[in-house]
Image 1: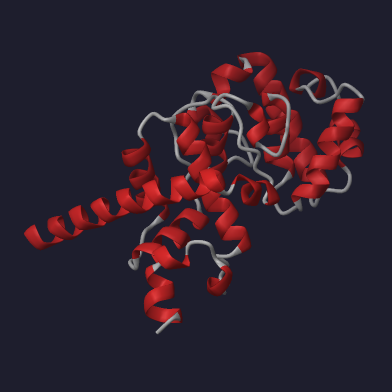
Image 2: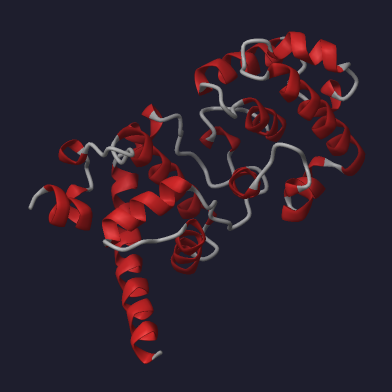
Length: 239
């Protein structure tokens, strides 16, 4: 038991140092994050989400983006904005068929139209702020799982929550040289970054960026900006 406790302490201390270094590098490489659709902004800004303007737009996009390229979703959001239908209370007044016509282009648009309609009605009845601040309420909405709910809490409600994700698990596991689950990655990030919403947003955006560009299932280690920090690169690739 003492050995296991000691190992956890060592992991935590190493993770703290790694997270600090990653935060510093993400600050220096904001243009890289932008390539992956993250715009580093004020702590409370909605524009982190690739320049989206409102909480409604972020919620709508969180439903549309599943199994669909972000570029397609962003075009639909921009079109909804142009015609004044980028508000959930406006979508609540439309039929599912009307919403289907608006979001054609995304995969499974009929299913997503149904989910958007339900989401819009719930938000209209209970209020957007009440929904996004309550993790249980978010997860009760069809199509919103753990990662999406936590992302909405961080980027819409500005709560100090780190979204559990496969990217965080994969990258921290490789960098630290030991298996880190999604839940453990969440705990480590929140433990170190605490209530700093800006750093939590920056860390999540940075982790997703590295995961999309370099740390793939088959990683592009030689071009990764974090290879000198990474146990996987040192012990598996370089050796």
